[in-house]
Length: 484
Image (cartoon, rainbow, N blue to C red; front, side, top):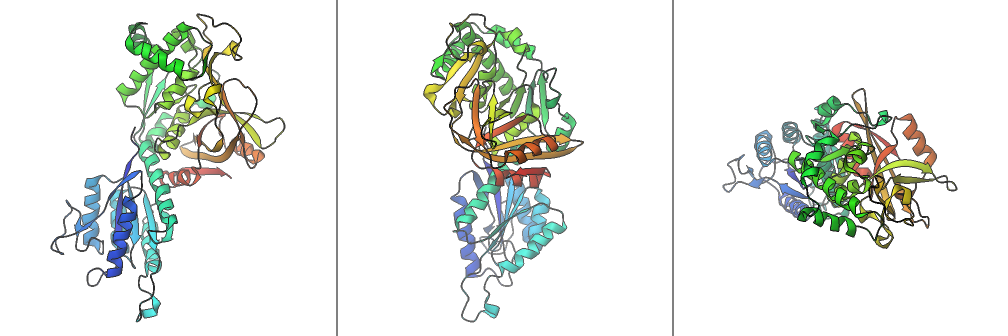
């Protein structure tokens, strides 16, 4: 899935007689800096060839900047044609608050506001100011605030400043996550476990907040595709080879590999036929009874291929996976985890674990990865044909900083847990896919989980996504619950 977005750049000016040399140069520098960044395409107004004629189709204004309501109308229409996903409002001098408000109001997309620093004073500068962006930016922002348009103020920079690029990157990633969430199709394969009210969700609330569509099927609905595949089909054998090659050690029987290949192909067909963005799939016990396997490692393989799969029919867990994966532009793979136990000796360390569902690309040491059966997690027993407990990955997750995310909805109000930690290496041999995560204050984190209604599932991804997720919450009116 492509998480690239398009941003519309609005170079806002106050103009009495065209555009000053300073503003023209700053516009050029801003566009150059933005176009050099990754993860998004850029749309912006161009100067009309005759210096007069406005054109919404081509995005022409008199100077290539936006100075009045008429030019605001033109640029708003141009950006709508270009289907921009977010706006960058940048005052090159004092700017024009009215046109900025018009564009933001009509587009209805996330807005980043950046003011520009004051250049060196002119010899005859009035009050020593040449730009006045510092002052005019307040007018632009008050106009947005007055209209109750959410925006993110990035700061006061020159386009060459490192912070300029950092703020735009945060914004573009938030826009990517928001775009991915809005109108997403979330697959639900099967029902939640009988004892897991914890993963209950409100489909109507998802429609109202995100315009999402849940695409539900029974686990048994995959059986027709599963049964149509022959053991010696080329695509089945290719999958068998891929599954076998995903880990260093395989201690399950060949019949598991055949069944897992067929199940993965059936699930992939469901994903593609329905254009899904993420899915939540039933695990135990239906898949064992219907398809003769445990499916933990299959979900890890699906997720590694970009087909995000949450366990135990946790639909909101799948939505959190999508949020973080899109914020990472699909470049970092998430892990769907349990908050499992607190470390027995270190009070600020917790076990982020699940039965064996982590993508193999997240393994700390590829040479110490295995595909196991639940009763044989040491790999000492001979593989047993017909083993319904076969199919669990076993490895430790690679070290590094991680961000946790979890979405919950109660009574139509949404909240998002955002927390960070550091995966620390361990010499232990534990079952499933796992990591010990060091956090700054485990007691505060756990109290927050308990008191804010967060469940025992979460999503974890390598890297620091705090700033991005906070902006996602800002623009989607989700309460951020940040544990630092």
